Length: 109
Ligand SMILES: [Zn+2]
Ligand SMILES: [Zn+2]
Image (tube, rainbow, N blue to C red; front, side, top):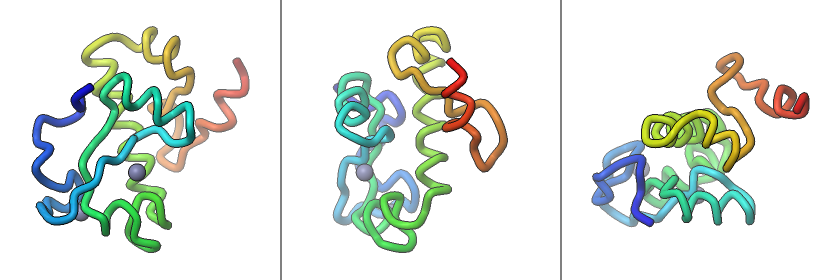
């Protein structure tokens, strides 16, 4: 499925580069990737923003990683609903503080 997050798949979502673009799944892990593919929760990132050890979202840039997860949830909820997000994804990335209590809060359920 095409990305529901952006129509512009010609450039890196984070820095705007048009070189070396890769598909980033906003949700990780085996199950997360499948869900991201199925629901269009993907963005294009250049190889640096994607996999660089320091600035890449799969490197130490957990801030950008969280930003993209929240973005995915926001776009999904605009298109469908919060209830559907929780039914399909089962984890709320939008609640809580900037630094993310999502791991803890999700365990309450
Ligand atoms: Zn980039
Ligand atoms: Zn990725």
